[in-house]
Length: 355
Ligand code: IPM
Ligand code: MG
Picture: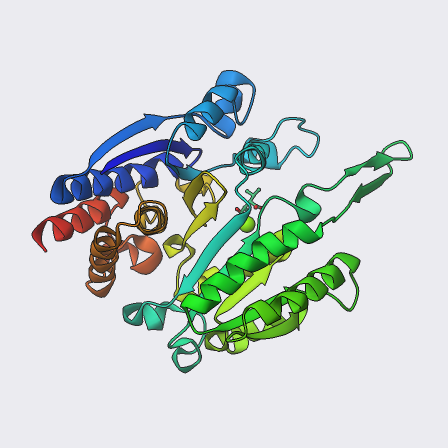
């Protein structure tokens, strides 16, 4: 198969971790006889430096012309501490999601049995946790009207959703629930927000089309609590953009390290795969960042975009092996026993080659 992939390493540790995924991809292509066509594009702070635009047209074209996008991370502290900055790296990610129509963000939270002791939550509570967040990604408060008034002394952001947008994302939720445990949780704040009431009403009206699926409706504040109390009680959750942003960060630490969790952002004609962690500027260039979230994002790409299940499973097995052997970066190992970003990548590549 020919795999045409746009590679956008981005900022901070993005390039380091993406580099390891590319090593893994090349090894998979060799082993399973695929042809890969990679083209690299600029996004984020580095794109602002070069093009004065965090998501330049050139990069957009490259993404449109590819079958899938492998993305690293975005963000630079020089913008975080300047609330008045007009152009910010994060705008690149939002522009990219919107222009490519990547409306469904899939964020799994899985538990690796060999890392149960690394979780901040008791083992008996997290054992068996396997959650899939389906987060709406191109609407809501992220893209509503916003601004300032009264000489800059008043600010507002608005949250808006159309029924079509909700149907589109809820459909994804129902479809994944159908393939998994047939349980779907609709996360909202329908006791307060009008957009949440439209979510609830819309999802309720879709239930009849999926008679096998048991749907629960829960307020986001209660979900935030129960995720920590009994994470294994959840399966597929659908959320609006902002609620999903917050809950997926919360859930990511359940596994023991945020450096492990991958994600996919799916649109009509394209899909982007990225680790859920950020650019981790303090670690940039130090070879201490965990490449596994990026490598598992590649695995999701092979499964979801290219339907290459064996290849994806080969990567997952190699990752599990590295975790079981604790061949890991410092986030999962004390510093004196830890391996570098590229050593972990090499271990995973070697395991795939030999098995
Ligand atoms: C994420 C990130 C982004 C978001 C930021 C970087 C704009 O936190 O992908 O979760 O808020 O969506
Ligand atoms: Mg986030």
